[in-house]
Image 1 (cartoon, rainbow, N blue to C red):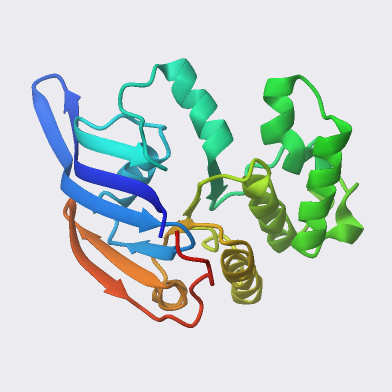
Image 2: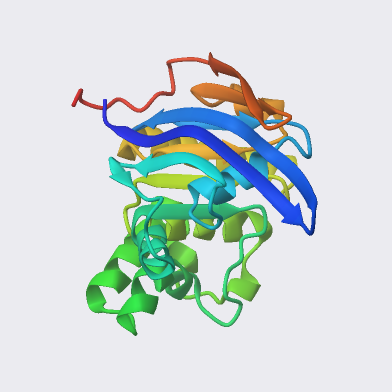
Amino acid sequence: MTRVLQARGIEKVFRNGEEETRVLKGVDLDLDRGELVALLGASGSGKSTLLSIIGLLLRQSAGALSISGEAVDGLSETRRARFRNERLGFVFQFHHLLPDFTAMENVAFPAAAPAGGISRQMRDRARGLLARVGLEDRIDYPATRLSGGQKQRVAIARALMNQPDLIIADEPTGNLDRDSADRVLDLMREVNREEGATFLICTHDEGVAARCTRRLMLSDGLLISNDVVGHEIRADLPHS
């Protein structure tokens, strides 16, 4: 099985003058290709900080981080930004769609922004991804005309645009009603199972965690449990 993420001894200390707050205290974490993993923990446990470090939005104070076998700790800010755009996908609690763009333009954005425009190939891929998430009839709708659940499905399609090694989802169902949340989670499970996409999902919802393949618990800056939930929804991938 291909190792997508390897984190060793991840620590994070925030400093404010002489005051120090140690948020992460030595986290070790491995993710393999095709996993659907839930990260749980109370507010203040360090979940968001850990996700920000894994997503290359924040640098750790100590420890080592590799993504798909590439050590990312020493990358410059420019190379980190390029790596983040090309190799990682993000789904947030609030979809962060561009309101003046259509669904297709929002999905294509991760590829189009560095290229300076949307090519025919990008357009075709974005349309295909929207069809994949059940929005083929909303391709040319502006984001403002989509429901909350539809916007989150667009966000999932956008996260898949560059065929990332890892998709990081931060409370992706937290701003949705129960029915919409279930549909979004079902979609992530389908994408995981059928396309082998790797997900790390930060959530407070035990129901969401129960439907993942593995459940991690973070408490006071430490990973205190790492439990396999079930095998029936694990992506069916060939052995590497």
